[in-house]
Length: 115
Length: 114
Image (cartoon, rainbow over all chains, first blue to last red; front, side, top):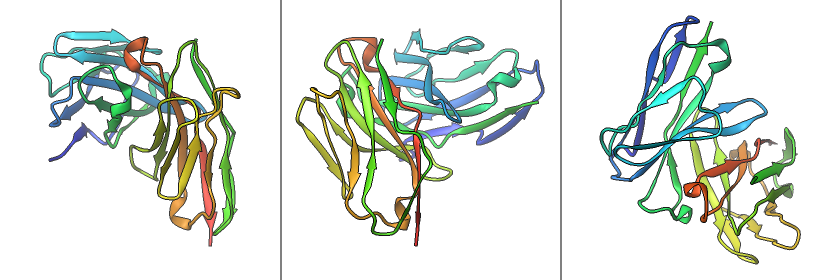
């Protein structure tokens, strides 16, 4: 039982390149989300999904796309990377339903550097 | 909108010292409150939570009480250990809106010296 798996763990991109950060879960949780963590900024929500086929915007969605074709996977796409997207990215999942008291499970993160 | 403010770090303590990390919040509804901990190189883990006023969350010797009158959720531990060195995040979630998304404070880095 792996929980939440993020790949890759580290990535260096050149400005303008595209890439996809992967998030996979084996917990059968409906809710999945992406956060970015920057020094002195805490974690900020990028996009989230409450189930397959449903996605919505978070606090800082610009420059990122998501899709949710299956319950298990929630990839985050950078279409044209910018240095401002240098950050650590975390995927987080939650048990079914909207009740946040169930708690979140976080992946171990992807450290992305855009040069 | 909803927001969380927590004390700036870093905080450096000696082993067995008393820890307080302040957290206050702004919310339009009745949020649930959380403390998450991030150990070096890892993702976030839920440390404790409280879902209504006057609730006390506790785990691993850490405690926090949901104070609606002061909109606070301060984290405390009576005697810290070197293994408590980590970054601590206060967070809230409003069940009635935004799908219960978490809103985080900026984090407080704690270093405990032997």
